[in-house]
Length: 48
Image 1: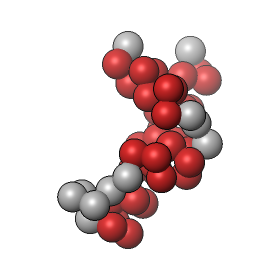
Image 2: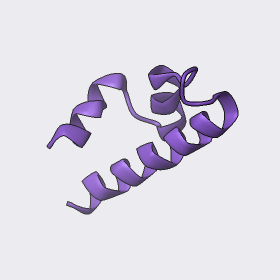
Image 3: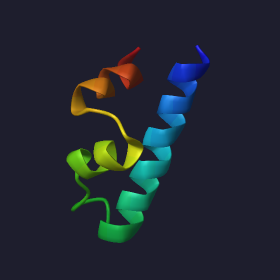
Image 4: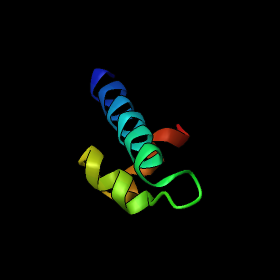
């Protein structure tokens, strides 16, 4: 369970950095995933 929580925190932090750098409207999911070190398919982690 800790791994999932760490991944979620990495995604959250990466999203905040992306929103700060580019604004919400221009934020890129691909960039957020790259910053968090996850694949785009890993976004399903947030849906569970």
